[in-house]
Each structure stands twice: as C-alpha cells, then as structure tokens.
Length: 207
Image (cartoon, rainbow, N blue to C red; front, side, top):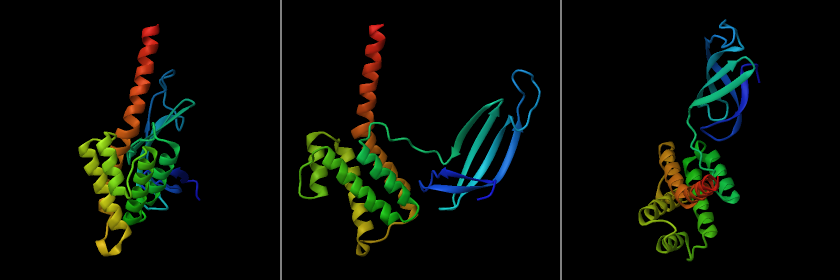
C-alpha cells in the first residue's frame, strides 16, 4: 500500500479495504487566529478514492484547521439504520451489505435470512417465512403496506436462491436495500427513537 492509500470501510461494498487516493485538490483556508494561509494544517482537501475490493469511487473532504481534522463523505452517502437494532440483526444486515456489490443474488438471500431473524425476534408464528410475515401483519407489528414490502423481499430472496426462477442484477440491489431499511426502521429504529424522545422530554420537564 502506497502513501496515497488508506484502509477504510467502503460505503459501497461494506468491506474494510485499502483505497487508493486517485485525485486530490486543496483549497487553502485562512487561519482564524492569524488570518494567514497555512498548508497543510490550514486547508480543505477534496479527495477521490477507489476501493481496491469493488473498484468503486468515494468522494470526501478532509479539513485541517490548526490541529483539528474533520472528514466528511459526500459520496456514497451511507444510511444509518443501526440505532435500535438487536445485535444479531445488526450483524446480519452488515454481513448482507458486504455481499451487495459482490453478487445481487447472494445479497437477496442474505436479506431473506435477515427477515427470518426479524420474525424470530418478534415471535412470529407460521411454518414458513410467508406465513410468519402475514402473522406479523395480523398482529400489527408491521402495517399492511409494509407487509407487502416484506413479501416482495421474500420473493426476491426466492429468486436469488433458485436459478430456475430468474436472475437478479446489480441494478436490483439499491431497491432491495431501501425495502430492508423501511422494515427495520419501522420495527426497531422508530420505536427506539420514540423511547429516547420520551426520556429526553421527561428530563426537560423534571428541570
């Protein structure tokens, strides 16, 4: 690995991988105390990096201001859904993300396993995933529209697992990920945020 490489977690493939810095542009910024220009301790560096695993680009800024260093990723923008997730489900989702840009069929199969874990965690009843998802809908754990989304994910899982049913491509992956986000956010993240908000409000009222 050269001096123009860093090991980072790729926002595309989810792997901790060496990334080559293939382009760099620096905007010098005045020091807030002296108003003079410094380099490199006073500037904003815009960098394009290429993941050596999936070969996809990341675009970021690295801002130096005296001794402070701030990094912001502009692309790809990650969606944070870890808040409120049980550890076993969070691990399953992260494992699925690593398969996203390797093979769309494997990604769909692993998301199907994630759905099964959600059903198990929510104590869904039924002989198969189809019945368990319907049970969650009947109990009100997930609303009707979200139940259809979950069944759509289940059908994609079946296609990914059985070659005779068809073939998923890289273009299908973003939709599958968004559908997964919708389910996890409704079942876990939104309730966890509501509890956090209630605690914060109770604190404020106590003051």
